Image 1 (cartoon, rainbow, N blue to C red):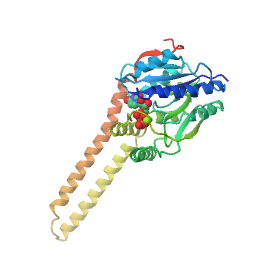
Image 2: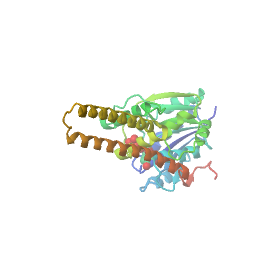
Image 3: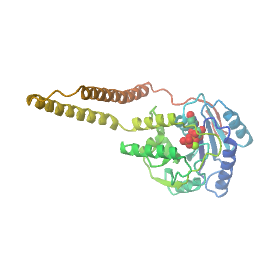
Image 4: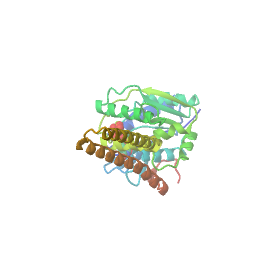
Length: 319
Ligand code: UDP
Ligand code: MG
């Protein structure tokens, strides 16, 4: 029972948190190694997502001071999901199981023990699920939980209140490698892989330093990405809406003909203008949603690389 664990951590401008994160994880890894749950070949792998600050020099320094820390340097900023994928795809060849987490340790690292135990019990995927979000701001909690609700309403099969804190076995990662989509939304794809899975709950803490790299704009973009890459329901809604509007206009037409027949006065200008604007708005909205999907198709057909790795610091890695 000497399985190798890699903890993969995407880092974007995380110079304030890296030292603290590294020392906390070192304690955790050493206790797991001492308990015989993971092999001494296990590593903490930081993925530098094209940060412009000192993130990469700090990762290099950590790697030199202790081989427990390894690093990947991406050629430029590609966003959280792609950085995570770069780490997972590199780690899958070096490890038996990989846990992904954020650099700010908002996800309780004590859940790692339970995840590793579940792995030894035969699970291929273990989802970390937040039991509460008390420490998040009201705004973050409201938008994030709303997002999970909308996702499930639209038929996307995601795990409620699970972000990207999860354990995946080597074969689950090999499954993930077969998903070639460029529009990457990991927490929607992972449940599609299958295999035995389980859930570990934990409390989400506060960021101990630095600030969130997910402002509202990025959160909205991420939500849009998630919905349109997992579900085609919005397109179906538009068709239904279009049909409903058309039906209403037919009813209106009948009503007006009846009014005309009985000699009532012509209805006002306001109602005409209102309906012109309403229909115009609906058409623009519909074109926008369809455009979003066409944009996706466009990007997928190009099949551009999802990340480009510039350097790898890991004593087991041979390119
Ligand atoms: N991150 C990244 N690339 C980006 C933005 C964020 O790799 O372009 C990383 C970031 O360093 C962190 C994780 O994604 O490890 C989650 O970001 P953050 O904690 O800022 O998000 P929040 O917890 O506020 O949702
Ligand atoms: Mg965070």
